[in-house]
Amino acid sequence: MVAKIIIGKHIGGILGYNEHKVQKGSAEFLWAENFASDAQDLSLKQKLRQFEAYIELNRRTKTNAVHISLNFDNMDQLNNELLKKISQQYMEAIGFADQPYLLYRHFDAAHPHVHMVTTNIQSTGERIDLHNIGKHKSERARKQLESDYGLVKAEGKKNQEDQIIKPVNVKKAVYGSDETKQAISNIVRAVVRNWKFTSLPELNAILIQYNVIADPGKEDSTMFRKNGLVYRMLDSKGHKIGVPIKASSIYGKPTLKFLEKRYKLNEELRRPVKQQLRQVLGSAIQLARTQEDFQKHLSRNGVEVIFRKNNEGRVYGVTFLDHDFRTVFNGSALGKSYSANALMEAFSKVKDLQPTDKGSFQSGSLVPDGHQIAPKVPDPIYNSEIISALLKPEYPEAPNMNFGPRRKRRKKRNHLS
Image 1 (cartoon, rainbow, N blue to C red):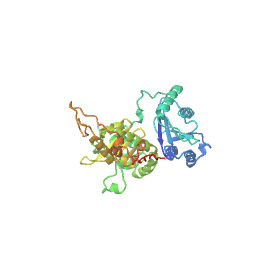
Image 2: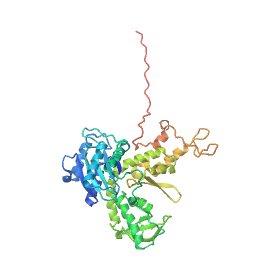
Image 3: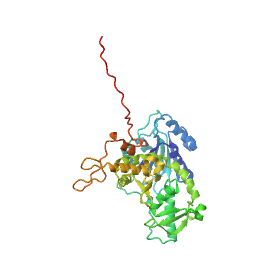
Image 4: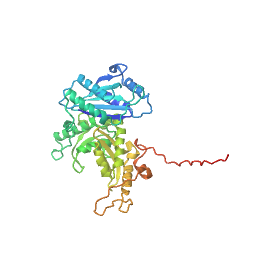
């Protein structure tokens, strides 16, 4: 069993995501805990109002939405009643037994899994501390549930292979054949169904990882003028090859008109992940010395970064792919601090601060034995340039430091009586 907790600021986006799945038939509403009325009879707005009533009790806490998923192995035999029981025991173990929450069973993946929507604001107005809740509470609860119900253990088990989207094998593909069309169709359907993107370039940032691209044609082409779209294979160098597959011929018809509807929906669905991704990026920016170092830090957290370069090799854009939560963001969509220009500037400043053997900071300094000196970043309290580059106001962990002029103390005068 694997438990995932996403925290955010928009309970409506999380609730809408699950309700939309129910409307599509890819999820089922199972249970409402601590609701004033039977949630089966409540509309989306009525469910949302119940959560908002709790959130209104503590307006100071901005991070007040919690989205939890419990994921099980295919070997686990789980009916709805057992899923409800496991979920209730899990919520009690992490301190949410008295919170209002909604339980949904999803059918959009090959493995059994449920989602829970709740808030960390209590009926008293106090908030439940979410700091390290996964490490301190969720992990213990997961292990206990595996033991209590004989569930397949998460330790040592590889990621579910049936969830992995495999790239088109270009070498084996027979361009234009039914097999090639099927391979492209499988990837497009899986990506469109599972990933949250808000533009064609963002969709292509994902598809390119699987040797496929969505092609609307050149701006002066008939296909482009008529809002047409085809999907094509890419070779190892990123060149388009083979016969294009019309979007309308793929099951589900992922045409431009269809995708534009998905953009609006995905904009809301990815909101809960946005702040968490910013925190991951903020930590990586503070730790990274170079662009490559930054990519490694993010990779450890399931985030892939793609730097877009022009013909001269200059980085002009950046895209982030969160593989854990299957969301994609352009840097600019996360804020100026995460744009390509801001990142390149931050890396440049850190690079320029590399110490030499004389104690000054220069890039590329070497010690006598030829090894690179580890970059030393000065204490941020004494370097406003590094603060402005690495700890922008958008980062919630940035210290609130006020270095305004100090008041002069008045000297006490000794009055002779």
